[in-house]
Image (cartoon, rainbow, N blue to C red; front, side, top):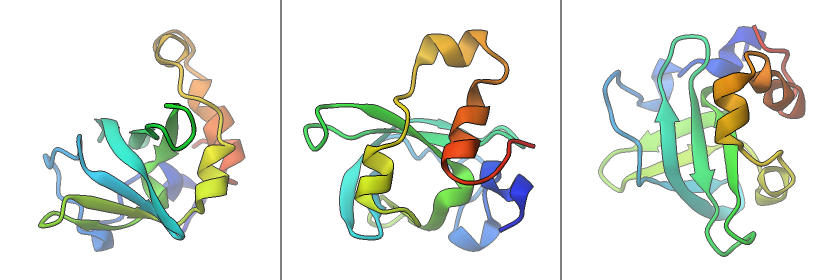
Amino acid sequence: MSESGIWNHDPRTGYELGIDLIGYKVEAVDGAIGKVDKHSADVGSSYLVVDTGTWIFGRRVLLPAGTITRIDAAEEKVYVDRTKDRIKEAPEFDEAKYADEPSYLEQFAHYYGHPHM
């Protein structure tokens, strides 16, 4: 994946513009992690916000679109290339910071190993 790819949907995953991923289950490489609570398809800053439910005390974490490996629309599942532990340790998503701080996504890019482009 290219550095800019972390924030873009890869067409090979099955993502189609306009698909609503909210409510889809999210599968890490080692099992279920939660459900999509929010989805942005903005070019260059696409992401999912995943509600982890009771698995890690109801945290909401952000996953860049580039972490998605496959979308199964029939089963309403999104598969990502991160482990549950990696997602568990991610910074918690803060709606206010996202709205007010233009560089907010950079911390997620650094956490997931790619600079924000």
